Length: 594
Image 1 (cartoon, rainbow, N blue to C red):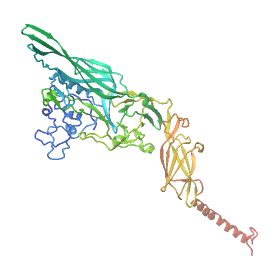
Image 2: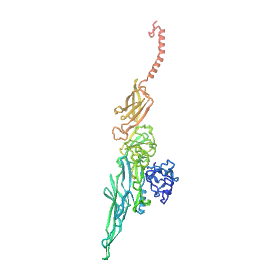
Image 3: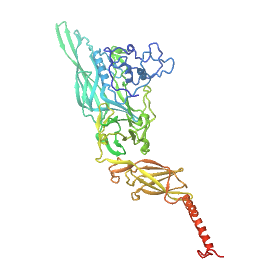
Image 4: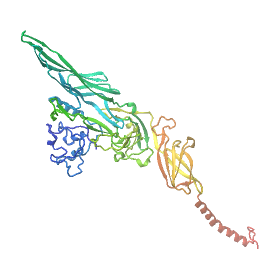
């Protein structure tokens, strides 16, 4: 199911719990079957509660298949969908809005809790930790070989952390009374490093740090240095003397994450144009990871990558610094974007006017006339691979395998100039990434389906020889490609040669052939314009059915008809002349003898 990627805020100004808004999946007294997953937060930050659960893939999903698993009566129909399954989106959702509000909520809290995924320090610098809360923008891509976290080359790192000081033990020495207390606790710095190189710094544990020019695989590291100043006092009653010192204790905590820079390369997106019959042809190379391509005409192609959001592991459970589980009011959870190849087939389909909307795709070589539609998308099949495995808590519609394509072919039958397709805007799988594609060649090919005719040139008791002519729609002979002739369960193929000028003979082991199927497949695809032998006019694939085959020599019926006509014309004349010869006693023709 496609859904909006914007987390829209609701009308309420107060963030009431979901149970009070009537959007929990089950009524309070309804039995809840055991399902894998973690429930989403009970609050929405005033985002639309009716569809809030859709952003929390990995939650328990309930199919409502039994009488003891009934949803809450107040749950809306749109709200029941994410209760029964997880939801995918056509583009990366904007999770930054949620993460920002979570950090605001954390700053407003007591800060006396920490997620179970981290181990805070102990000692004078006590209960201190730092974690990367989110990298923006970022998409976790699931592929058969594993997952990769792709980040924008220029982005932000949001951190979350806490710190405190604990009074050290200061035992008395001899007769001197020693007292200690924490005078101050401060954050020296929170610094972001990329592969050890300093990028940005802040003085807050909940910082927003900037990085720039990320390339390749990199390690993002955040470090927080905390200093505790202790006032240590020595009181000597006998000497009536007091000494004061201010020792400092410093601790550095850190957290790291491996990311890979994601950037669309303009050179990977090349466009070739063809002037088809009453249509525009577009051939476009696409990178391995892309999301959509939009044209000036308003037409848009979407890849087969689909997106869902969930919270990373280890953020649902929190501990209190005083011991035990932390209350919900002191916990926060980030959202993260994930991408999966959701369906089998090419990574290309059309958003509008396309047969792909009905789940149908056409291979190169299909009947040209059969696929005449407003906006048709085909593809070059790529390698097939197993779809990546997701956890049992993720309930999404996936096929067993998926394929990848490197080229998308479009035929647009509309009134737009084909030049309107020359510079598509291609968006990437990481939110906010896009680039422009450009023409790979200055010339435009005229590509038309091949015209084919056939006639019989010889028949024997066991075979039929045909003469086949292949021409472009404009009448030019076709000198490259393969023609396949099928008749009476017999199939023969012929490879065209330039010297044949589009005409050749072929023999099928069958007599009396009067209908056949001719299929032409080009040697060169029309977008291979750089090949000098192709020229500016090329023939494209086509299948033609010949219902009545003409012969180049008289048929048997024609010969019989000629003989009968001859006899009927000349027999009366012969009888007349013979009668006259008898009447003249053989003097006219000399045939009669008395």
